[in-house]
Amino acid sequence: MSFGDDPAVPAHTAPGTSLTAARRARELARTVGGPAVDVLVVGLGATGAGAALDAAARGLSVAAVDAHDLAFGTSRWSSKLVHGGLRYLASAQFDVAHESAVERGVLMERTAPHLVAAQPFVLPLTPLVSRGQAALAWAGLRAGDGLRLAARTARATLPLPRRLSAVETRHLAPALRGTGLRGGLLSWDGRLTDDVRLVTALARTAAGHGARVLTRVRALALTGSGARVRDELTGEEGEIRARAVINASGVWAAGLVDGIRIRPSRGTHLVLRSGLLGPLPAGLHIPVPGEANRFVLVLPQDDGRVYVGLTDEPVEGGVPDVPEVPESDVGFLLDVLASALDVPVRRDDVAGAFAGLRPLLDTTAAAGSAPAPRTSDVSRRHAVLTSTDGVVTVVGGKLTTYRRMAEDAVDTAVAAHRLGAGPSPTASLPLVGAASPRTLAALRAPLRLVRSYGTEAPAVHALGARDPRLRTPVLEGYPVTRAELLWAVRQEGALDESDLLDRRTRIGLVPSDRTTALEAAREALGRTLGSR
Image (tube, rainbow, N blue to C red; front, side):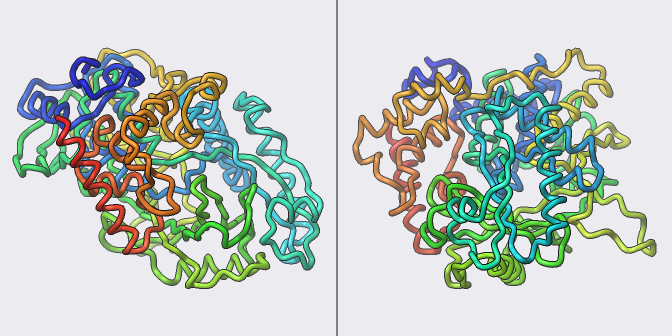
């Protein structure tokens, strides 16, 4: 698709990357019942969208489908952190730790510097943290800086960890209880502006390389040579033929391929309103009482809200589209906060909560063997598995390492099906919106938009300049504007109000907020339909 395909596409938009309803209709008609593509990817979370980009960037023809919207599953419920792998050193998973540090550097310095920035964290040395534990934590942070060095990430990107006095610690986290506070440990990691923004950038970059990105297309059955699919908008069914099939459907992977055993783990976050904990220049690592090397994170967000998470609990039974948050998770997180904060956080202070399901690979033996380990102890190492009929499934891992997971899955598909493709170029391939820090700083658009849209921020900002009504926020006290909803429809493949609501205003909304946001989403959708 070129700029000329849609007069509404502004000049700031990267050529061929716009995902519109019209483009979806054209490419769906070409794909279902049409000639075989080289690679069919099922699932458009971070790993699936990453696999579509990886394959397309190698010159392969690609179709990528999802039963819902972009980032509908686990990828939209993350902590928005890009971890450097520190926690894996403690369990001697050195390869996983190094891989995480490398991929963090790739995102921060090469592929998505507009979306990922350095985030400071303070580990407070409270009376619950013994001097021995503090010494181990400090050694761990220094080892984490060694990971940064081994990954060749610049010191300017991630500063050196250091010790803090009690006064410095309280300055960075005034809500901490001062009694018995000995100081703190300051460290740095990566933080995403928004996990959905990352997946959207991946999908649009893949589209720019020719991938057919087809949301609302459900895979009903997979084989090594394609899939039976259904258009969820019309109910029509058909076949997509492919020379290789990659199953990147996360926690739903076992429902499409026999022999895959997923052990979902629930990660819950609380959402607190801005101001409750006072100013938070840094995030917090609060040790879980009675646990070694386990922390609850307090994560300040750009919109003024604060996330508190996360849990790691096994999920039994069927996999829901949207996981519910049990009161036991809420109580656990509030109890950990109470162990370190001077500011009381009560159940009524929780504005919202969300949970994601980690698609951990179940490697335990058959029933009757030793008890399965806790999900928090299950390795985050990803796995690429090939079924007897040739379907390649990628599971495990985490958001930070999506690119490596995608590369390994495509490598396996290329080798197994003898596709003509070279090595992956994605470690140095900028995503839509990416640019150098100097270029991003010079853009004429609000900083908040630059951190979400990168070089496209001026185009989003221009929508509000042409129509002042679009400058207004969707909700009082929530920074997302109606112009951003309009952009999501025109450029990013949002097909209806639920897509818009899920992507841009989904976290921590009370029912009355959701009603207001839904009305704004309908208005944006109506404006776009009226302009066609």
